[in-house]
Length: 297
Image (cartoon, rainbow, N blue to C red; front, side, top):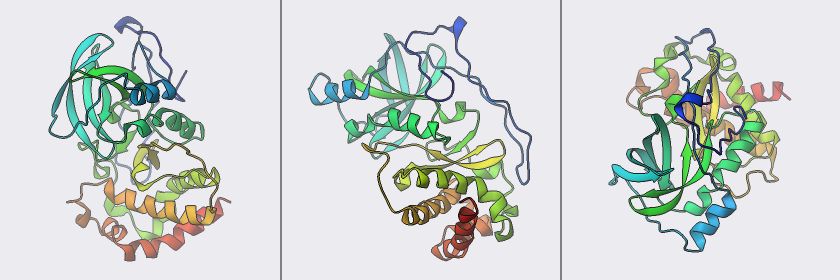
């Protein structure tokens, strides 16, 4: 069904894989280069609705335990296949593992705590994507066995298999400095660099979408910096709220997200990022971002 909520309910073998590909853009501005998109597909035999998964958890129909960094490898059974998950990162509500399933790499998310809330993520991922925002290309609840425990797990597409770059602690092998000449980021070109990020903020504000700081990450798509939204365990994604307050909160989140897209040891090398990483720097930039935002109204 395309990029907006890919739906694959039957097993897809190697000969008939559904391919997801985006034409690469030419480098622009201070962009160093644009990587070629990665072709991928995810074939799964079963997926569950949120209601089915929550019932499975709360009714005691499954066994569950909390996974952590101590579980560097986890034996799993997915679609009848025995596979081994290798730790990527984790904490908070879930732990991420890379798994090779039917010759393809996927990301399997296992519980750490508060797992019933995580079952909201597929519907929220699709809802934000429909608004034109960047989220994971694939997010489904799939019943699996992990370390002998029956679990409604979350399956998603690995960050490095997307056609755009995602900068997040769960993607430790990439940071923004590989693709952007960060020495050229200055106060004079704030609108050029942050304009598309502000447009994404406007979308979530105008839709009264309420998100926490952990949901905000950075992406590089078609030569533009964009928000990448994940970690979406919200029961109610859209609420009534004060749009001015939401705007200011989200612009501040955005400013925090930019330095976090670079290895923290490198931030001090780039004066502008170092400035953004301090409250004083944010206070200097915020009026300009609000001006950019108001131009969009």
